Length: 310
Image 1: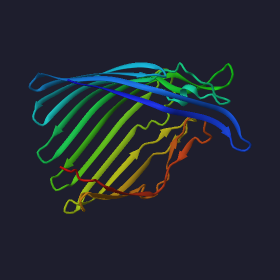
Image 2: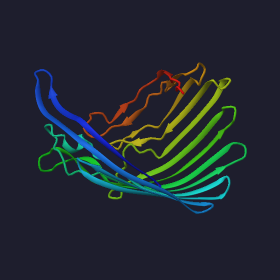
Image 3: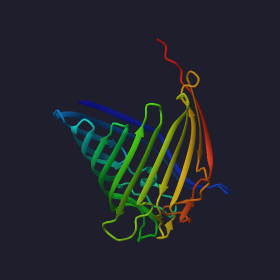
């Protein structure tokens, strides 16, 4: 059995709204908060090829209260290279201070806001093959309750966040990957998901039905210098006005080193290599229906790890 705890103290959490010239302060809020957590997990071997994993976590937030969340996994290995899993879990997203306390003109706070909760149920089949192949297939169902959304208060016309909705997320996921001893790695995954709102037929915003991801990594110089590529496809998504944000495919390329010099690691990544123009749907309160994302950009990273003394 594994047990543990966590404590966090947020010493300063400020938010406000003001004009610069002339200076006018419309809203100022200064707070502190704490989070305390306890958790326990145990692995029980029911028989040689069957394992039950159980866990429980309790989180206490000073700003809204506590939340208890269990999780369980039943893992069955009928053959050495075959695994079946039945997974269940429960988690939450705590409301943030903006959603709880923002009270600038045109907005009102809601200190009684509660966390969003989600239950996760999943069936998984993992299969390994002799020639370094691995495949995974899973089916999942995630009901989400108490979804936090911005609404208009009919009494005064102010915007306010409320626990106003539920969502059901169902889908299938398939992954095939291969990893060779010489450092060559490749994977391809596809996810189909359908998100529905049980209370109405309005399309759920920013929820793609199809996701594809492919990656390839290969050694260039004696497993010290590598080149990799990952490709991401996202199908179209509904915006708040019901108009679609178009599907897009984005390739990223990376050149990186491992231990080419003692302690040093260097990488260079080119994102959105073909400078594809695409947009993501926005939320309430913004003039744009969708916001254009970054075009081609790059990042260079240099790191050094100090050796441990003995």
